[in-house]
Length: 326
Image (cartoon, rainbow, N blue to C red):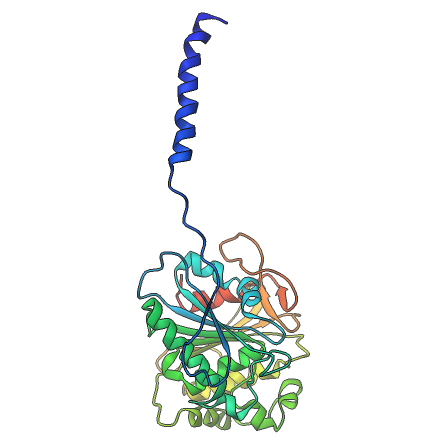
């Protein structure tokens, strides 16, 4: 060994020891947040389960998103598949993830078609409202920035909550779902799903107004995402949702914006005041499911799987941007 090498040896050893000590003595990173079940959130007349995701260190005054799974799904699977929890970590909001029980519905569908579960103060709708109140209290959330979304039966239940509890939600996102009161209008949930109900825009709007008598507004803003090749819930239901909620908002049914987003048709309908009140995405060629766009890109989220369909557009991201979550 040369003299220079001998001189460097203790210096290198000292540096290595210092680096090792810095690793050993560094504080452990905070553990990642996880899904937690919440019990005792109210009288729970709909006998639902409540789960939630709260990012570590979430400050007070942040928004709350309620995310409702589809039939055969559960809260944890929907949390992961949609990408909502990843966005919650990135943008700083909490997520309430209700879960249906097989004792209520064998396929674990939310009962969007049952009179007893879609009325204010009753059944599953009341249970969901109680979850919102509990979450706002526990995390000191912003009551003016609560949003609701869901897939299929969860999408139909999203419309239920927007109609029955409009004062609780700033906006809703219906994914492959149905308008409020559709099963009653069609006489059967299956007719509603596979054909659609025959109603005028005014009749659709009256169903929402009757769900919350005396409510003068504001009403939640609606975004709809629906596959054009959906044979489980026909795309006619997206048209009916547009008719229902443009009528509620006093808007016409001529789109003020018609363009494409990620290659899919996109429309925006503005109310009398000029604000967007209804927005739609028609997912070209997509069947029945939640649109996702797996990956690490800024606009990507979700994971492909059964009823989580990779179409190059992530519903959770688009909804989050519409709601100004991030």
